[in-house]
Image (cartoon, rainbow, N blue to C red):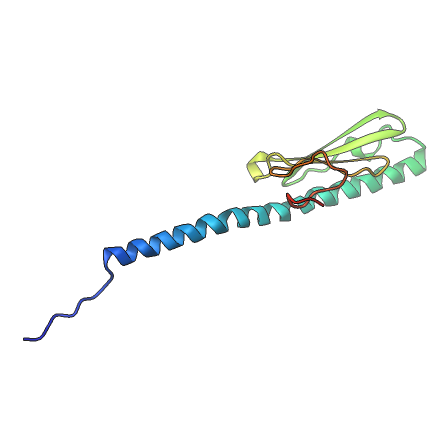
Length: 139
């Protein structure tokens, strides 16, 4: 009599495979999320730098920052922008991450003296820092 050959996988083999996939996903997902967030930070850095240049050009032309171009900040996809002009010779531009875009907790700023600052960055220590963090380990 000929023995019947088995086809398919046993329950143990499937469970081991699922466990391996779950472990790999648990390791890869946080790294991927951080990678995507680092890509979105570029928007804030680029817009802050452009707004800073526009404000400096305005100051050269008008000898004041009052009513400068940062009073109408750009609309961003991942960040909202705000500008405060406490005096005719000072300003601060701030970029704040939009929570619905996965950027909650990220805040950057720049002022008239080109002081770049990371005010908030999830997982980073030593804040506020006098540079723009692109990853939690620093500048």
